[in-house]
Image (cartoon, one colour):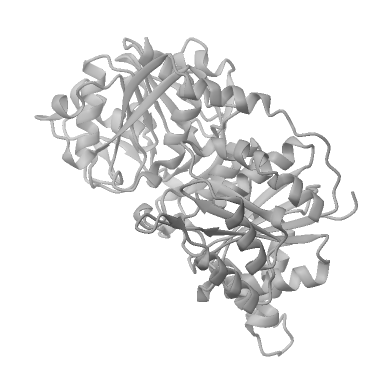
Length: 533
């Protein structure tokens, strides 16, 4: 295949319709048909990346293997496609403008007036194509964040119009996702919002090739016909996306709606009979027919917005299915937990996860939680700050280091069991000291973690600044909290484990970032197994 084909996914009517899930589902189907596919997300906000965004604003910040802090949709892409994404898969307006302004300062534009068209749009088009450099993809799927009609999305929409014109309709198509609301008062579905949304796209110079209609209830053929007529698309290019019980059903639904066939036909690409999607269907069967039911507590401080812990909750779905178990994740606010009420708050939990996070808010509740899990032999997984809380709790209550803490929260602590590495102490930029992306870790053979992974060397993703303080290595080891995972280059502690406990593991990295439908993360699988037992 000579040329790369481009698919753009835009959204209309409202945000949060699930463009990311539709994009990931379509990519999954094209991949299952033997095409090599990648997905990227163009985000219209002016932050250079989501790393500095509050989780309440934007949900979790996802981290790629090459250390990019990205939008949480990239997590969906990886979970569906089982292929890692990179820096190039997430582009923000902030990054686009930063690049253009830097070029202007260096004189790259030779004294020309720098404008949105052509300079910003050219940079957007360059970024869209950049994702293919060094990789051979047949199809690039690009999701445009926001909603058609937003001021901030306009440069992206204009770039898509130009690419469609430059590459031709056989090499570049647009899928528009809109909402068809159901009015219970009149008992009917309304297509007018979709018509208006398509009109807004047409005013920007783009005729969508395929419409995906998000709806709560199945739409009649008449409604699809009406949308096709008024929005000027073929009747078989109007696809229904009805609400489902799990996002992982969407690829099967889209296969039934022949979305992938319509796309391939429009791109002039061959396709044979439908892919069986055997592993995917088996995963769904296990998910919907569990043998076990357990309740696990996720203790964090952003629990009001479940998207703040998106990758963790999805990892529970993957590992739950693997164990034929329905995992009910209860989000519990760490600020509400104290030494006095901890038993009441965590009653009935078969397992406890202390979530990652930054800053001092809610940390005491996390430390009380760790103590409760440790003393009551409840399976425990501490992720990033969760591991650090486990270290602090152990230092205070087992090693009798009164007031032991992380210097992030108490820089005057007598026992800085968690601290910055020496070379980081002079850096003042918030993001500048972060350990980001994939790092190697060597695991001790006689540990539960080794048993879970089944191999001595792993690569996991990081997003943190503070580390376990090596000064206390032997104290912990002697008293039964063993550093079982070490970074081979720096000797930094990556994994802590309690010897005399059913299942108690703290990891400095984020295992949730690399859990997928086809490959659930071994630590989560092992943790759920311990909870069931």
